[in-house]
Image (cartoon, rainbow, N blue to C red; front, side, top):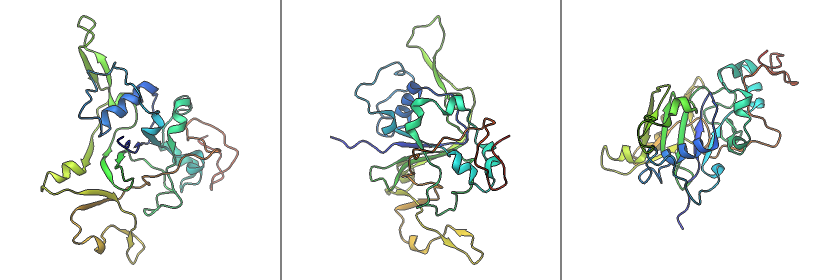
Length: 255
């Protein structure tokens, strides 16, 4: 049997209302193993059989309350990570959450900085390289990625369109599309280590890469194997909640 691909990583700074069916169909549309055989609009109502659990297909990189509190801005940094409790706390989302930071892997020193980027990544089967990456303005919401709708009530049910409420812009690249530019196969891998200049600034140039034309390294700010939430972790919400633990500035939340 073919080995299933690793879950797609979805990292964003705003999380809207989602439902399980929508996320499942979203995954079908972007998973590189199914995009050539799936028609996301025409087949939206088709029921997929023998699908693995959603948590095996897709993961959401979203900071915990502790990660926001321990950031350089404290709780106020969480003001740029927008997610209402009624949306973030939906039960089916809980197994999908992964931490933003990883103590064992923080080459870009991002663990204590609140993320505001939006990135979507599909790791390769080896778990170390990347099939495709999209750096974009899309958050994970129905408004941004679109929803399949009937074109008109007066037309047959199979006449469907993808209705996008908020148009966004991003940059997409993959090993396949980059390879076509010069005819050679390439691998996209996260930079695992970084040099520092005399001022301590991170330098992305690495002499070890010279002559390694088949490898393209990207400064991914989180690990492809970013850790799952611990039992006492809670997803961050930007509701005005009072948290017992103070941040470094003595605050108890976005109050």
